[in-house]
Length: 180
Length: 147
Image (cartoon, rainbow over all chains, first blue to last red; front, side, top):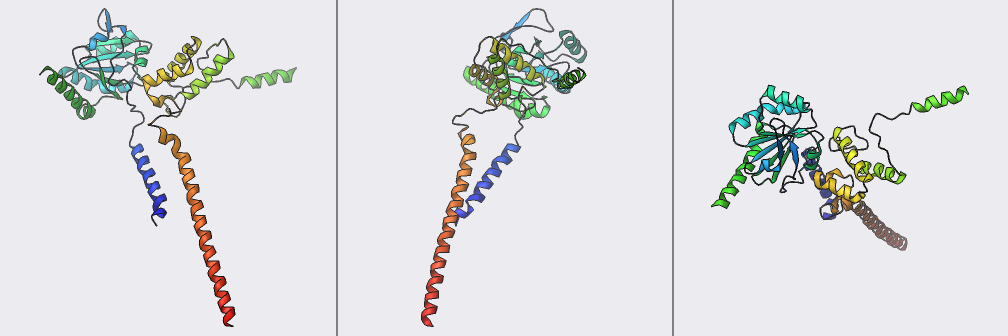
C-alpha cells in the first residue's frame, strides 16, 4: 500500500525543491570571495591626486560600490548612497568600472560625491578579480580588509536595513569582544 | 562567369555579426578557444555561453580566455580561475563532488526507479492473473465434475 504512495511522495518532493528554487534570484550569485581579503592592487584615484591601493580598506568598515556614469541603475541608488555617506555609519569607496574618467569625475562633481575615495578601473581588470559581473555591485569589507558580503543590484534603504546593517552590527560586536 | 559571381555574392550574406575575432597561431588553439567559450556561462544572460552572448562581461571573458590560451595556460587552470572568482555557476558543467552528486545521479536514478516500479507492478499483475486463471480452471473442473 505504502509503495503505491511513493510516486506521489517523490513528485511532491520534486515540487518542493522546484518551488524553493523559484524563490531564488539567479542574478544574486553568492560571492566566492566572502571571508577572503581584497586582492592587492594599485590604481589611480579619481577625485584625488596620487595612487590608491588595498590599504584604503584598513581600519574602517567599508562599502565598496562598483559604479559607472553610463549605468542607470547606479544613478537610482545614488541618492541613498549620499544619505548613507552623510550618516557616517560606514565608509564608502567607489570603483569606477569601465568608464571615462573625465565623464565620471564630472558626474560626481554635479551629483554630490558620496565616496571617500574612488578607484579607477578603466579596463574592468580589478572588478574581474573581484568576480563583478554587473553594475551596480556593493561589497561589505571589514576593518581588516576582508570581504564579508556582496550585493548585486542597487543598494536600497530596505536592503541596508535588512541585510547590511545587521551584518555591520555583528562585525562591530565581534571587534569589541576581541578588544575586551 | 556571371553565375560564379552570383554564387560568391550569395555566400557573403552569411557574414557573422560584429564581434572580436581573435587570430590564432594553430588550429588546435582555435578549437580550444571555441570549445572553452561554449562551456563558460555568461552571468548576465545566464542561459547563453560567453561564445553566444553579446553582453559586455562576455566580451571581457572571451578576451581573457584568448589571452590565456595564447600564453599556454591549460583548460583546467582557466576554468578553475574563473570558478574561483565567479563561483561554480559560471561553468556549464557542474563539478562532480559531494554537493552535486545528487544533481548528476538523480535523473538516471529516477529513470531506473521508474522502470523498477513498472516491472514490479507487471510481475504482481501477472501473478494475480496466474492465480485467477488457476481458480477459474479449478472452478471449471468442479463444474464439469458436478455435471
